[in-house]
Image (cartoon, rainbow, N blue to C red):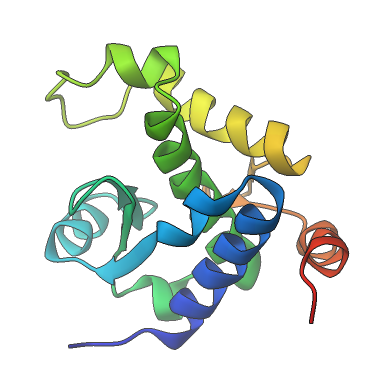
Length: 151
């Protein structure tokens, strides 16, 4: 199995923060490298991750995320994809309405709902940077991490 330590570390930092702020279900989230994520990323540079393809708590990343993304982008994408997992778990309206949608592109209301649930849980805003990737303020994430994670 190909490993990606930067991606895995960013993802599990996010899971730990969500576990401490949202609750026990967050610790069921898993991450995997995925050939489908690799294929999506090869077609559209900014598509490095997706959720729910290997189960209800799974997030997949393209292997290229390890070297192509900044820490701010890795954390933001991890948060965003975790937002999809949480939105599905809570059966939020846009996610519930799109379950049978087989289109290649995820509808905008579904994307916005994933970002919104993360904002409601963490207070962090996911924004798009100049590379059209999702990004989060790393200092704000680290401040939240220090507040909620007991080490």
